[in-house]
Amino acid sequence: MDFTSVDSPEMAAFRKEVREYLDKIVPKDLVDSPDWRDYPESDHQKRRDIAKNLGSKGWLAPTFPKPYGGGGLSIDHAIVIDEELERVNVSMGDVGGIYSPAIMVWGTDEQKNRMLPPILTGQVQTWILLTEPHGGTDLASAKTTAIRDGDEYVINGSKTFVGSDRKPDQFWTLVLSDPKGPRHQNLSWIMIPTDLAGITIQPLNILSTGGVGDHNNSVFFEDVRVPAQNLVGGENKGWQVSSTAMEIEHGGGGDVGPNRILEHFFNFCKTNEIDPDSRDLIADVYLNEDSRRLFGLRNFWKRHAKQPMSYDGSQFRYVRRMGGLRNARLMQQIIGYMALTRDKEWAPEDRWMELFMRNSITAVHPGGTQNIDKVIIARRMGIGRSVKEEAGKLE
Ligand SMILES: Cc1cc2nc3c(=O)[nH]c(=O)nc-3n(C[C@H](O)[C@H](O)[C@H](O)COP(=O)(O)OP(=O)(O)OC[C@H]3O[C@@H](n4cnc5c(N)ncnc54)[C@H](O)[C@@H]3O)c2cc1C
Image (cartoon, rainbow, N blue to C red; front, side, top):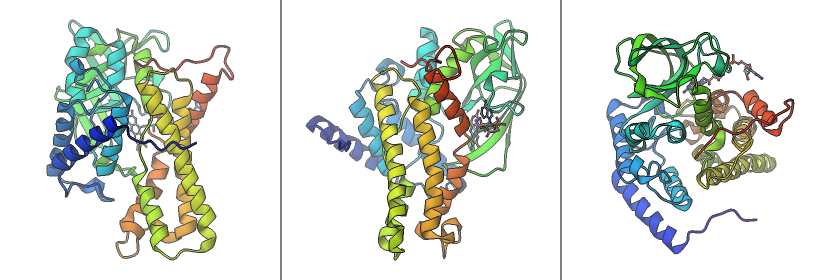
């Protein structure tokens, strides 16, 4: 079966429109490079402007309703936009994101009208703060408290391994709102504007995944007073809200388009003399990548077509992350130790291979590790439990 999409005349015309618009708004010198981490503030602002331009057309959230800042468009439009964004290969910081469906599903009308447009039109950048120093994987053990005081919640505690190298406009986070309540019924999901008093962001110097501005931080809250209207889904109902956000983070959002770094690898194989016996290893790399691409496309379609999901998200994420690790090993076998260097003289394909090696390791951890993918798959199959776990609710 051939899964390569062929545009209908309508989609071909739309693709042309998107391509021409992107060529107009993306500065030619603003491509992502293996030195992503070091890009200047002026570049950051240019990236934010691209997001705002796309947002003004509803193309940051093509299938979301127009009144909330989305495009009101079809899945086919969304696929075309995603593919064309992949083609220009430019990142836009912490825009859009995994928390918008959670607001869509669990927010009140007032919250949807107030919170969604700035996010979906690229006006605000957001970090998602879930991991705590003591808890890691066990998100439900959150100790950062949010105690109601009049019209505000007072936040105290800390989160870690979060964010990027540019301070965002808001945090979305899971907090302990009933310290004496039962597990999973004691948490709340709240948006915290980052300009409030009592917030400290402390950068962490750890191995980077290599994404644009990729840089983790710890965030500390000391008596931070947050308007109560920012709590979404009801007090102590945060676990169900976070399960919607996590459904997307755990792969339920899918992905469209090729892996750019692997395209560098295939280019290296085509343009250099390599051992003919490596051909079967190169085919393995290709097959791992194609499995990732097809699972990603399936989930992207299912999500936007509002099809029910089970373990689809974690299955895609597991295949993507383990396939990435396997590919890193295969690429080392094919290219040799040069794949590991950042030395400009020796590094193949302008150091993209080294970035892939590093990324394949660190990318296993964000949003829960590969072990958690397997735990979720088992629960959704009903293995080890009397009741099958349901996927987080999406709309
Ligand atoms: C690059 C990067 C970006 C990140 N970005 C964010 C972010 O934006 N926001 C955010 O909130 N967090 C973020 N994180 C944190 C990430 O979600 C955590 O690292 C992850 O959830 C694992 O937690 P931990 O590192 O504390 O490991 P631990 O929870 O201590 O786990 C240690 C080991 O035990 C295994 N393990 C733990 N529990 C189980 C279980 N029940 N069953 C089987 N095995 C288990 C794990 O798989 C792992 O191998 C990021 C992490 C990294 C590395």
